[in-house]
View 1: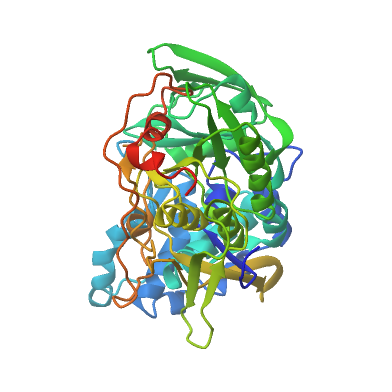
View 2: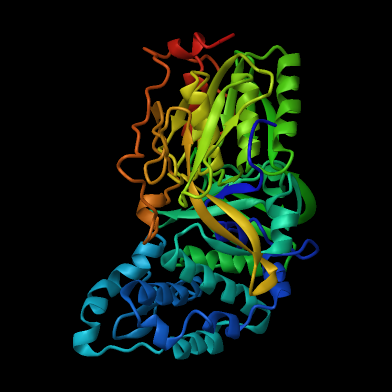
Length: 513
């Protein structure tokens, strides 16, 4: 699987997968909450880092302690406001609070803290949160969330803790068992929108589509509700069925009954589209063990059907195993190609490169779908295919995470893994997407919103000026011919543009290249 050093992983702040979406909810399959519960994390673990004396030792430490509190508070619909304490989130806010939103109001207070002798009692603030909002079954998960909030500012946004069993059984597994409805919701311009439907899930089965506007869920009043609170209600729903009403493209309201099911979901999905020119859609949810083997099988099926048009959907793919992403890139570039390299922050570590050793399996036209949720290892794959003139990118500028992490058991708790940022990765050209992202060749404005690395975190790592290379040009193309038949969801403009892009002049020259 290529020349590579083992054990590296790339994920956008994985806690979002653990506790930030409506996908991972279970009765029979273990939930994220249950994985955290098994770790036994307690206040004692948190107070080793969040202590009043150390929290006030520097501005950065103070912000890290504040973020530990804020990340748990916002989950319960409140925020910590300077000189006012905990306050309910304003219903007028039509976007979700990210780390910068939560900490920015405290900048002036921190500047004046010595003059005004402002002292925050963080342990009292935590106990107030605990007594009013955190039940015993969720306490270890909330402690984990607080610790990750602390690490995000004190270290960097992608150094994090994760239950060891969750990593082994869910994150690193190419087929994971879940009991879920199979959709993810976002909020944009005061509307709840379906951000993602997991292929093969109950939501996919009943026809829920990406981009549809959510009008109602059960009998809940969604007006003024924050995304955090809505996700919490979905996760806490005891019934196996959920009623969701969405607005269709024709302006009609469609009500769907989605039955939660306990099933194994793959991270690799192949579908043949009903288009005038045979086209395959290959969707990768993340990069886990054996992802490359699964993609190889899928591409063999594409080759057997003599399909020369391929859409590779990497939207909202948070990353995963770097060597799997490199291996998949090799299926399109062929052997002996440098896919990416890593440079360690500590000079004592030797820099490494991944050189593909896979035979080229597919040589047709490729369009890669990307958005602001395309991150880390998925940026490696998209960027490598673009740099080797194998594909053009369609969609939005990507997330911009160019750092990599190495994991080990946390010394304070053997049931928890600690992933620490060790350096940055670079494409063959020397370009790294850190805080920049990959710019698409054809831009499509996404209805799903969301922030990127540079706009989301307080303490994102910076590349030095000597290491920052510009993004190289991609395939040239002059115009796109019309498409007689478009397949798929009309509320998905990125997918429509991808099908049109397959007819672009530049892409047509890739065949066999």
